[in-house]
Length: 235
Image (cartoon, rainbow, N blue to C red):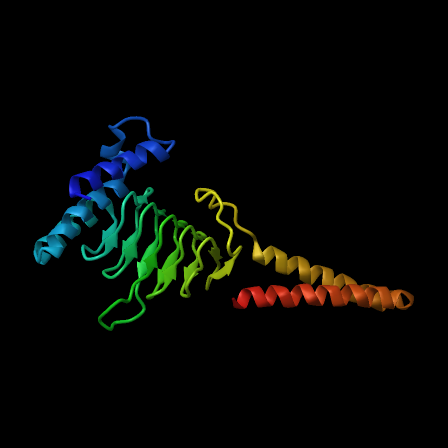
């Protein structure tokens, strides 16, 4: 696909998918993410043609005007949309495939100073929530979702959701509507509910010894739920 066609697709993608878009005039003032991608596409072509200094100058100016930092050597596919965009950082060896949605404050960073592939690979259809940090040479599978402010340092399987610090993979193998990134489970709430129920069981055991058998069975049931919860956190 030619450079001009890619840029046209970038603008068309916003018109098609962003309900906040009202007119072409919006592009001039309200879509720094789109302009960052456009300047990246030009700079990337120059970088690959060995005009590396010029490419870096272009992306340096882009960073001043859009507050989005993209290395010109990064690989970014078609119809990638950086929504709002302020504070997004995309490292040199990052790979982003087609139809990825990135919100403000996201970092695709490295954890090593060694040369070579040191930034994430993000497969098609991924949604990355605001403030999320994806660090290191790891892969985010197709149609996965990264919860806002999560810190991802391990691979995320396709059609999964990763949340937390450090992020844990949950809801594996479920490809939902990629824009429903607000539908995330509250694992802290689930753990507190378990603890409250466990305390209630222990209190009843102390208060009603005659019902001890039934309560012990409930306690064993809760123990199994807890073990399953811990096991899911390890994966």
